[in-house]
Length: 420
Image (cartoon, rainbow, N blue to C red; front, side, top):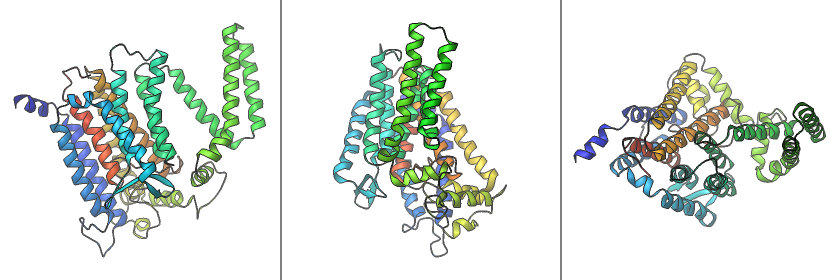
């Protein structure tokens, strides 16, 4: 009993407080996003905000259960949990139904479960478990391969479900690997690949091949002409050419039609304000119309007249922008930044490598969701359909983010111990 009391005393109540504040603000914005005069009750189950009240209640129960369970359980059962979630993800190929082109949802009665959301925290646990194992060094090739397999297998399964947005989230684990000793050159290479991919969509391939050949010649004359340097230049040029050559295949065969159209709109190759660009255009109008201090709670005209589709889910941030303005948006972003900084500070104070790695995974996943979701609403990122943590409507996302965060809070309560 005394040990349990000390564990509760060691909980980081700042993280708990930020979480509670976020889900409350999120719930209020969902209410504002779908509010109408005929359904005023916050607990009207025919409306998204009424159903969200159930998800919030369930999330609080889940959080309490996580805090009650012995923290050593999570480190000990990381691999079994990862395996179970992978099986759940695989089950979608047999039981999932089509939801806007994606086959990642399983119907359980009236509840729709999205296993991809839960795969994020399960992958984080498995990665933390592996990298914290004695004798594992990030500099070893074997460690790199196994780490990328832990990340890539669930990502690939989710990609096969036609849920490209959720699959891309797994790329955020690169920051965890970087913290654990992965060379910064890998991050630069990843950035280079993304930039080259985007440029390949805008510039003719023959021009790009010429630029690559020219760059290779410049490097050849600038560096010492050793065998190693020449091999690096040749390999770099071949990889760059292969990326450019494969862009058309990836673009036409991996991405779905609506995703290709959204990317074209984002890059300015296509102007479709009544089609693929409609959501983003209306979202930017809503956010811009909020001005400095917003129109006030339940006073958003873009919101009231349903100009922005999916406003309670993927585009919930435009409700914040319209009704609370620039200052309200700044408060919400500030809360997220405070949450992320606090998670990293807590991660760095750990004696347990497992907890530190897991904490960086939490921060990486939340950061990716924050940047892409808000980027979508203001037209700086393609619309790939990922929620804003703790704000967007949905039980699967809220519960998975709750598990992700509260497992870390519980692990931090054991910060004076070594968990493996």
